[in-house]
Amino acid sequence: MKRLILLMVSFVVLSAGQGLGGIMAGAAQRDITPPVGLEIQHYFRQSVGVHDALFARCLYLKDGEQNAVAIVSLDLIMGGFDACDYVREQILKKTGIKHSLIAFSHSHSSAALGAHNHTKVKNDTDSKWNNRTIEMIIEVVKEAQQRAEPVKLRAGRANAQVGFNRRLVNPKTGSVYMGVNRKGPVVPWVNVLVADSINSSKPIAVLFEHAAHPVIVPHTSKLTSADFPGAAVERIQAELGKEVIALFGQGCAGNINGFPLRSTHEKADHAGHNLGDAVIKAIASSEPVETKRLSIKQAHSEIPSRALPSREQWKKMSEANAEDAGRMRQLNRMKWLMDQGKQPPARRFDVYAVMLGNDWCLTTMPHEMFCQYELWIDKNAPFKHTMTFAFTNGYEGYIANDAALKMGANGGYEAASLPNWGGQVWTRHFGPPAVGCEQIIKDTLRSLGLRIKF
Image (cartoon, rainbow, N blue to C red; front, side, top):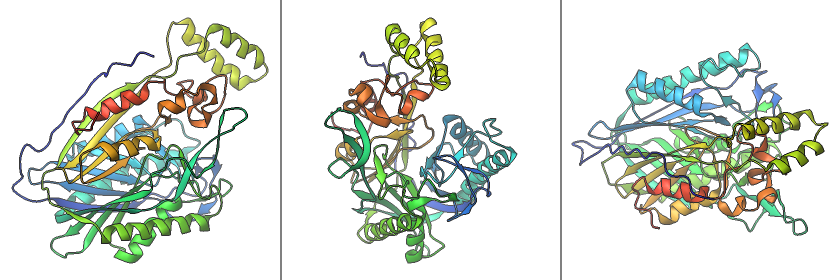
């Protein structure tokens, strides 16, 4: 398929030279646990209680030239572009911070964030919680900004593996199914960035990142939970002190499940405590970040969706599914596009890089990215330390690599297309991204000026 031309690249270089001062940092958190009765996602079920609280946390960084970024970590499953755009606009309006990153842990025992006064709610309780949560996100950014003080930064990494690759191929049918693929690719580490107060010589915040779906809590539990990321924060604070703000960033976990899948709260806590121990090890072996320059770059492209089926295939599917009202509604939506001569909408793809010279770089992407993208960035980006978030500033489903997308209908839950009715066929995109998206993604990342090798 012909590659989509990059629509727009916007560079924002925030530091032209060495600042007069050093790095300032501040951190804060707010409890955003939904009330009992609010819907848990995913699977959808109504909560009857709370196993552990959900939080909004913020790490604010500023250099000597007043260049700043707010990194927000949310114990929520996701938020669409409409929600994230609104929150970021309000942060800019009420704090003056031009660049903010809204990162979701993707816990499947939490709730989703909608836009302010959004209409897709089950009841008034959901709407009130959603609007109040947005207010608290802005409050936590304000507080982190107000608490900023001179810091020294450290970066590190330690071995860690909460889960396994979840894609297995049935040798008889050639189709992908979900399971435990112990030989499949994973991201086998945890990355950390520590902000130490110059005044007290003690850490005020720890930003840590690992890639694994928070799906260890069973889908049958009706207790709200942050899953293993929440337990990891608990373990870090037990070691460093409750006053230290520990922020989790979800890596490229689109094809990695936490292990054991949908088992017990106790096993989720155990996995999180192990991850927390790995964070402590990474902190112990961390290296100083010497650079005092903070720079941010951003780029935008669009990822095309897979083409609609042929009219002949559409006819066969409509005949085969005539008695299934849900499938027929989706098929008729497809037909409307076909009659209009249109293709399914593309996926928005905004990427950011927060850099401290050549010492450290945080790269963020939206969506559920396959782990191969994080591994590629880590291998090719020219920094001493890298950290990669997915699920940031927006969400529109899975972004597989081309090898998975080329499997077509056999591509499994994350990458399959019609006549397979699984996965993203039910979305407004009517299927996964088109083959060729991997190159678009890598070109967009290269356009950040990270000097990523070809």
